[in-house]
Length: 327
Image 1 (cartoon, rainbow, N blue to C red):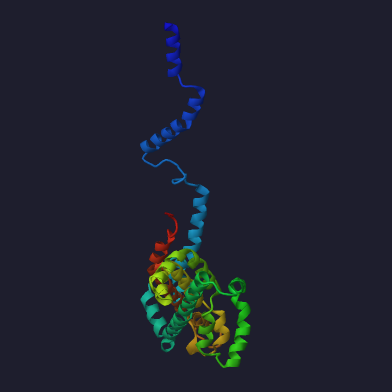
Image 2: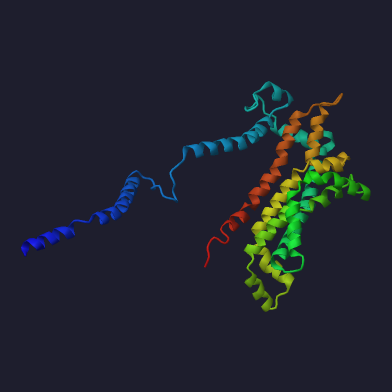
């Protein structure tokens, strides 16, 4: 009797092979966690993955590819005409002419650069701003209202997204030429109002960001459609609206081909055409080479876009987690 009790006690004290196999992963995990804590770092988990050397190298190359042209632009904006050719492109010259270059850029040829900047701002505010308003209104209506022909509109929008803008440039020029609108700001503003991608983006975003039940509750409480849109739907659509606005602004700010075929008067040039005209000036007979002003003007051209991105990024951050938690 005593021997059987001793055997049973020893069997219960010794874990079975199945129990040892089940406890092995937990023991190994505790061992790795303890080792990581002793080394002063977090253990490698799905939330804290092991660093990847190839991925780090690829990311570094992408970062270098992105920042190198900007660094070249900033460095060479500090050089005069002679310094551009006498010094290394990725290092500063002996003398700094940054502020002198800015002053010359803004005052050269009776301050035509400022005129080009104001023209670009006009095209962006009227064109990109109008495109954003139309995209928000159209996307909200297509996402939250049922009407005949809705599927046909969807097909047209998808087809318009697939058509490149350069394919429509010549037909647009012929149409505006017959209307007598070429060589005017309207020839750039009106085509910029149409943004099929922005409309599609707001359509998809409004369908998910604005709950239908919330709109129905507002209607039951007696709220009109306009009041419901401006007080309830529009704040929920703000991240998508900012995204469409930034895409439209960058597209209009960098637009070159459409103003090239529409505008011949230098007084209505945007910055893209104006800087290209300065660049071509050195190739004409008796033309003055102003490469230092071209580089400085290019640097001044990207400053507003960078500032807008920095000012509006908080709206993106507020919308990144939208819909990530379901209650």
